[in-house]
Image (cartoon, rainbow over all chains, first blue to last red):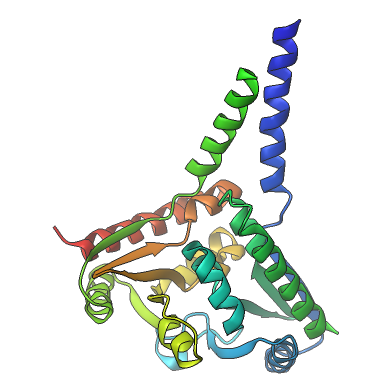
Length: 152
Length: 144
């Protein structure tokens, strides 16, 4: 009987560890209906600034991989960062380069524009580092706030 | 007590194994590393899309130098591959490589594609191909 409970305990702990990783979605998304890629990029740039981040650049997803005239017109990437947060994160752990600089992918379709972000909290769940998880959770909240403001 | 320790050890080991970015390092300056990386990328049909000089950007704003630059790399077919396999993969493009200057050695490491393979099995073949290509590029960079 004791062996049964011990085995059960082991399974529960392992399952909890798995759930901790699975709890975070890999992607954060937001749909902006009825607007063009240029309009949403403009709104996104304003939202980035209003949340104390610095716009770095925007590019087509295949920029510099194909001639300019062949670049994808419907998928764009916007890069931005907050240098204070970047400095603090790098001082903690260089693995945080995997979530910097911040980037949001914009995908235009007939319905509008979809904004997609790789969830930094999902990335950091793999690191097994309690020290880094709060930083990535805060970054996730910043992304969500920026996505929300862009989609208003 | 032994059971507890065993469970935690196994769990921790599993989590550690899951995170497995590729990396390669060799002696040289950041500029030499970028030159060598460019050659290695070209050898495998990849382009150096952009270098983000994190080190210079932070120093310029009064922060200490972390010795880090981020290179974005890719090849033309990857966008089509991502759209066919799983559009979520677009968020990995262009792919990110981190260059870390550490006492005369420049280490280049990739993002952890194994994490993506585990979470998106249907795109596993494409992700494995990209990972294999990055491994070959980094091996080329490190040299014999």
